[in-house]
Length: 415
Image (cartoon, rainbow, N blue to C red; front, side, top):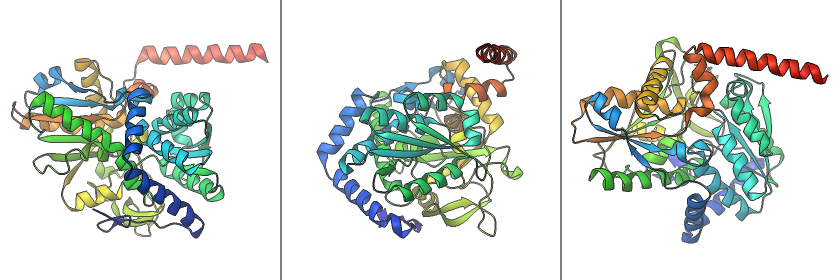
């Protein structure tokens, strides 16, 4: 599928001259690592001892009985170290950084999970770390900002543009251009110039390899369908790769429907009508843009999904009709999250809950002898402020107001 960084007509590496040597070095080290069994074994050993691999495949018995259709299984990437699938990618890239002998890493983050994972990896490997994050995301993901800083990372709030993920990526690239000799950009998703889409997907493929083995052991045959949320696309590519060569397994990516596709306040690139082919941030894919090629503002209740582009690999798989795409609105996401918490005692991240929405719609259509897998890409405790606000929880509001007064009085007493 991959040909000089292209997946069909999507992908490529549209980069400034100053970065060509850096990308050649990265690509060369990646190719060598990919052909080196010892590298992959070192990666697996580290993920099994430092992280929590293999992550379990949980049978959601109560949800299965509730919907009365296919058996529902949840791939628990929320139990991976730092609470999301992001550790899979950053640990792999960290091992590449060691190969290249660089001492500093930078990253972009939306929901904050990739930022936390990168800060964790930098602490583990003794690297200097800077994380770029849109000002809007800094505000709604404050707990993750706190942890990044406590692990020694410098978090830079990006105030340009829509002040979300695409702007954080732009700033990270500006930094990299200035510091190419000492710095590696730990891109967090399967987007950007080649070899990033292929490289990130390779590290994330550990999810699908595990899931395929686990579902065969638990269910005795392959699932009918596999669901994953899609922002940039790394968690989706991770689990889909376990089943791409099995045409009987339908793969469904679920994008952010936000306030509704018709409102324009969403982040649906492959199942909406506001996206078109374009080249930006170093690669070609479907972008949310106007007729002049200017990027549109996005919206999602989930900070990690409101990105204007999408993995070029997923654009290719959509064009080939190997992956079907759907969208979930903010309201549907909160409803699915609520149901999952009450029935299974599991708290999906708001991003992951998009996949649950579509799975819940379709599970009753399948027979009881069939199974489906939902990739729970992250845990929801990072979203506690957003979730509590969405539920309009009065006791939470009282707690926040009281704690705010406490901090204000404490600060006043110290001044």
